[in-house]
Length: 275
Image (cartoon, one colour):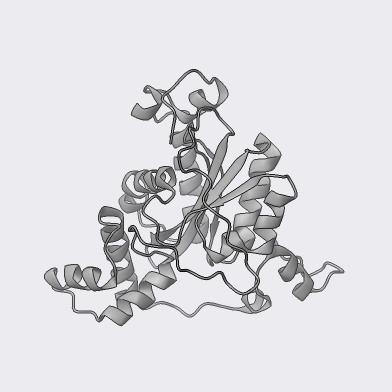
């Protein structure tokens, strides 16, 4: 992604990719085994009860004999990139220089492939550490169009996944994300605007969220990640890639009339509209 031999300076390459210059040189501090164990359990609890905030998660952990303060739970949740999902007014403010776009999908019937794409990031625990997974998903068929695994949550790996999806599958009419800084970055939104794609963003912590991507994460976690303990980033990347290939080609979905995402995407037929 960053070419240290390129004539363009590293700072200008970082700016073009929407990542901070410091992150290019930054080496993350190791996370303690205790915190890794906590993060794994918080991830499981969040998947089961996405409405739970830091206080409730602290209380759930206490019932399991794990004593941890609310502030530390907040710190770990931020590191994992998760927050409670519930209905509330959108009072969030964008990061400096980042524009927040309105939600465009209220009442919209999604009835065909490439009408709406969605994107999200999830935390992936490993045996000794963690990574982040981003996926671009076709809303109607649930097909994963592209994905990337990264050791940080900078925008660059999201932009890479986006460009791959464009290169392979064209473009959607609407692209929906949450308000994460990766998706509000100039590099990410610019790639959408350059192609005249309408940008839709969920309210911060909104109840409606990227529901189909959340269902994908549930499948990824329970059918792949929680059954394994990746030893390396390379192993995580390879194994997740194999699972997502299985998910697209071989895993039937009840919402797709028991068809696979590949079958629904490449050979569309009338299905119940996604809304």
